[in-house]
Amino acid sequence: MLAALDTALRSLAGRAPAAAADALRQLTATPVQELRFLACRLHTVLGRPDEAIAWLLTDERNLRLGWVDSARWASRELIETTTPHCTDEMLDRLTAVLLGYYPAGERRRQKGQPSAWGRSQYELLSAICPSRRSEAVRRRLAEWDRKFPGNVPSPPTPIQTGVVGSPISDHAARHMTDDQWHRALDKYAHPQPERFWPLRGGVHELARTLGSRAQQQPDRFTDFAFTLGPGSPAAYLCAIVEAVTPHLDADHWERLALHTHQTLGSEAAPTICRALQATPQNFTSALLPALDGYTTDPHPEQDVRHADTHGTRTDLLTAGMNATRGQAALTVAALLFHGSEHLHALTPLVTRLANDPVLAVRVCAAQAVLALMRHDPQIALDTAEQLLNHQDANVYNASTTQRLLINTLVREPSRFAAHLARALQGTGDTAELAGQSWAVATIQGCLTPDLPNSTDELNALARRGAAAVSPTTSTTTRTFSRCSTTMTPTCERTHPWPCGRYSTYFLNKPTTSSVLSSTATRSLTTSNIWPSLSTTTLAPFPLSLLMPASASFSTRAGSSATSEPIVRRTATTWSRQSSAFIGKAGRPNGSVAWTSSTGSRRQVPTG
Image (tube, rainbow, N blue to C red):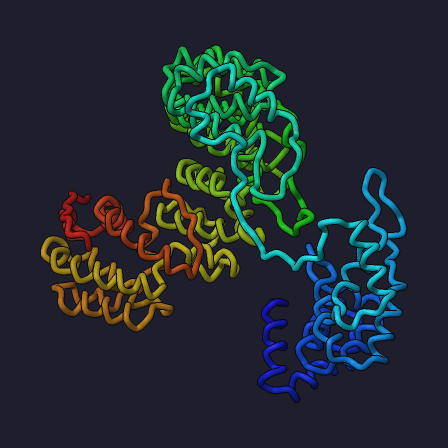
């Protein structure tokens, strides 16, 4: 922005000198350094040399205006531009000030550094027009030339970007022996002298190169990993483990994982946990002590309650995923989703993690409780209640606890309704996620009398959450119209009632757009639907809530980019849900068939 403003102001000097002079008057007296920089740049091009030098000498700070890597270059440019044309009197004034100019920072010599005395004076004096330099100026410049040989004042360099690369190229890495790898890993395990350009990395960049080679030669580098001991940076061994995991059988991976755990301790936890999540079939009972230890690791000690120094706050699930105990919880979940072989050993870990005092760990443990529900529903429900019974309502503020709450509501509504009620009264994303859960509970028919039975009883945030799974955007309107066009003719031939209720919902919804209303009207008027349906008043029943309760509701209201897929997913679940949908209303049994917008035809029995 500052560069653009600089360019705009300097362009005024040639196109509108009066406007440039007016801008200069406003900038001249400011104490703000950035604005004084703009004034200096404008003085340089305005063509009033005496006025420019007079302004330069009004404040010593004006002699240090420039860029980060050339702190006086703007001041130097002004002197270089104006001294060929200024009066002798003004030149003498400038020369006298510069010959006595020694900034305070140059008067103190830094230990181990060469003296900078005279450097600033050298930069500015050398900008005076050579033909107008006095004898005193020439003698002083000759002195500084001898003190700063080769250090000619230079302009600021443009901004450069680049990738911090590995200290060893991929080409060289392909030809390195194990001994050469050991020497390279030892060398770059310690900080290297900094170099400005090109950028060169260290441990982590070299670890990526090592991992790349391990991926190409898994057997060789698996053996190489056993030669790395506790003295090597953890990044090296972890890079090999991540690279070779997909290529190893359970026995070889067990040996490598145990070696990594014994060598690195808790530093290996993220790598081993992520590897087990990707390949749960590799887990053996020999790895249970390591996983058990990760569930009691001291990291994290507490939740992030307030914004950090950068003004940001990590959400709970992300914080848990970046903590040892959180990764352990996700690993237990992956193992239980994979099968029940280690159920007896893993169940105590689920209980421990579900009662963790840190919310970030609990929201990860919710995934493990959900997995446990597949094998032992009763213990899972008891554990879920312990997990959700946290004094902080933010326990509901994660997609994992949202899915857990939905599943518990479907199984035991009366037991977990209080948790949904509490979540609906939360703030921010907590209430919004609870609104989505309430919408799913509505379609599943598991709302208890003490819960809100319509959107009018929800607060604004919860209503927005419910709306996130309701087709209201223009993108959805087009999708709805296409689905209606293809569904109606087939639907009416086999069973008109679902199609009528489907359309009547939108006719009676006050927030539905005119396009949706006309589409629904067309569905009724072009179909052989019972006349009474056109005046039926439906309870709120968003079509998109026909998704199974296990679906993940991660969208937000008003996002047209996600609305269309929701409706498409709804269309594919209509055949699965229509049976319960019709049966609850007491309509005649039969079959519902429809053609989706993708052209596939479905038919299911009802009743």
